[in-house]
Amino acid sequence: MSHWKKLSVLAVAAVAAVSMTACGPNDSKGESGALELLTDDVPGSLRAAADKAKETETVRADVVTSGSTADSELQMTLDFRDSLNFDAVGEALGEPVALRLVDSVMYTENSAEDRELYGGKRWTKIDLSSAPAGDTGMDQMLQESNPSQQIEALLELEGVTVVGEDTVDGTRTVQYTVTTTPEKLAEAQPEGSVDSSDLPPAEDTLDVTEVTIDIWIDEEYLLRRFRSDLGTAGVTTVDYYDYNEPAQIEAPPAAEVADLEDIFADLGKDFEDAMKELEDLPGGS
Image (cartoon, rainbow, N blue to C red; front, top):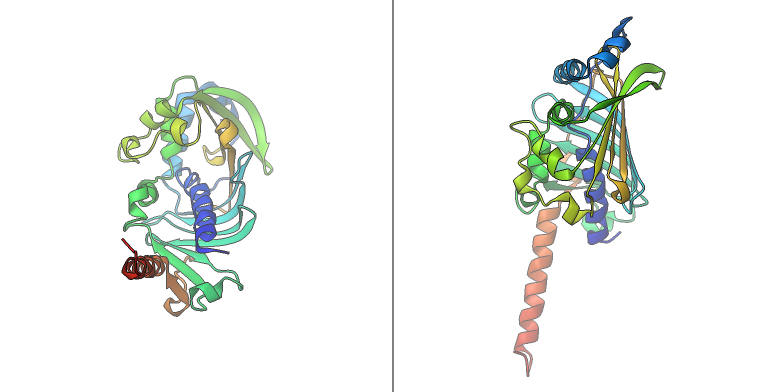
């Protein structure tokens, strides 16, 4: 896989991961009568779910993005303690992918045939808190994401309705839905989340003019499923399980890691040297 294809795969997988890091749940066993309350009191139920989500420390999630040119499937373990860390394995752009985010540094595992491109290293890394990664807004999205952020946003949107009762992986839930515009969804983000002015409009980058958000809340006000439908830009569905189970997410050994920033800096220097040699040739400018 080339350096550029690798970055594309990393970007698709990372975006899929980031798109759901703002909506983590907590564990529950359920209480009788809660489904009726979930149906009758939409604002109160969403507030309770948002408050419950803030208690999340760790969770596992299956993330599926489909219906676009960037289909992906990831199985993730997320740790919301301190800064967000995660471990993800799956497939993006038809390629197997393994990612780890540890202290704002993204690690991606190299395939056996790709390792010769990176000095035999099993992993490559890029620091999302530094340029050029930081300039993309990715680091800000990761650092400022909150487990209750997506639910908090729904509280600010008009038109949230109850679809009805549903079962998610054997758990009884109530499904809620709302359709809005990318602009209104950005405006609804809670204070302290990503500043929408720092990000390009979705209708410009993805040709999206309408967004439908669905969430499934169980009898303990716990988020069990989150779905974002961007029309032709794709649908992302996240299912949560193994709430607050022990999770240990660590950076790979330093000896097994190549730094992508160093690699591309070297490529840039090689390009500059090649251009200088061309200029020094007879007739060069």
